[in-house]
Length: 339
Image 1 (cartoon, rainbow, N blue to C red):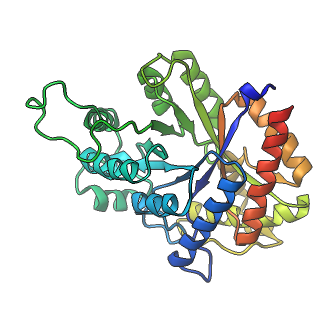
Image 2 (tube, one colour):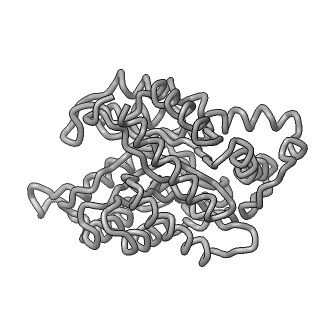
């Protein structure tokens, strides 16, 4: 692999609230993680919109993006993503126009069509009946129009200030083929959530690459894939650390969401037989282990997906262990890119 083909590596942070801590602690940890990963060569730091989840503190995503960008100097900061059907496109245009004006050349706008929550909460957010995401293409078109200055200012009555005329990269996010098809049609970069939808990864990637149409944004497809990576000094340590991530998904399966729980040694005993299949379907692409194990599995993952960039999600209870995981992953990526 030549240096021209180097694969970028980035961070997906859910601003986890761990058991025994609160949102204020979570934000401090996110800032520290962003500062460390910036130093270790990560390209971007994305935060995800979720609601009504006691273990995730990134509900007010735009505000947290500003907080992270203010505490860093050059790493790109953005949304992975903003769930557009939850919001007025004008409000998102103004928010991200403000962010881009505060931190020029560093802001990404990743967009999803899911609610990022349950249906009852989605209704509370949207105050309407259109909560299925079917209107996502329409909302996306409206949002993009706010960033493009009208040829005749008298024609367009509603305009976004700040926002209009700013070059803010828009990404489409997906866990199925819907956004892959739309991103290809519009010639936009595409990020796939393999970290919780592994079985749909390769079909969505294939669809995006095959149907991509060049645009003013991109001449050719640009793909980023999300992946759970938990790296430690030994396989045993990494597997124990990963039990916090598994517990989070177990609580979601059981509809009992909670704060991020401490790791346990007996995670297998906590899983019911029918839950094993669900966990495998959601977490099957996770890469967990020592440096050697992670390097081997990550190289295989990169070769299989052919991605331009990975965005790493590492849900670890202990902050220092989480930092260490990201540090090891950065070192591995640098080694892979030198191969």
